[in-house]
Image 1 (cartoon, helix red, strand yellow):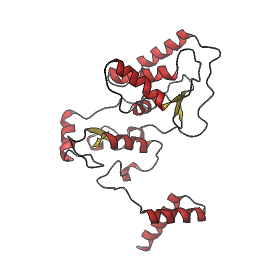
Image 2 (cartoon, helix red, strand yellow):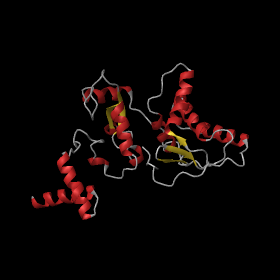
Image 3 (spheres, helix red, strand yellow):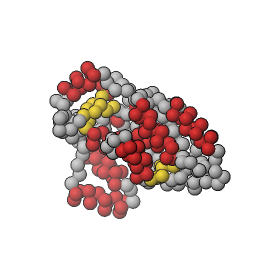
Length: 250
């Protein structure tokens, strides 16, 4: 999964003058599409729709600032034209373009994307899936339940997830797969963006061992007040309290 690029100041003023050579635009789009490493024509088609929206006809580079709603619309319009329903998670496809496909030239600020250059970086290893036999074994061992929320098939549909994201060094080995429902898979993907914490003690990666820590409302408020008074972050103060508690037990 890719690191979030939502920090301030990443978007640039769009360039519309002079209008670029249309042939150069078409050549870049064609070259980009030919270089996609994703398996399957369906994914490649969505990637090209996104790139075409980020660099529309008549615009220079940097391209226009495109909202999440506009990204969703261009994909849904194409699907509706084919008699297909709206797409579930177009922004996961955007993250794959920025990550697996190497388009780090696409930046994001808030809910808006922009193609700021035509420089395409190195590709990652194409996304893989466990074999049908291994996937059946994984789901059987999990009692056909989502590893995180516990909902089970056929109420929900399970999909294979890399416990440790490939962007953090996770591989396609048997032990790095877990079954997640679509909602939890999307939530995990969002949580992993920009995260540099240890995956091996993360409740998203190993929910059977590390459960989410729920802090009651009154304690949360006291931490907030104490952190403001001490001019430290709430997380820093909470971890200081925990370290102090465990050191007393030694």
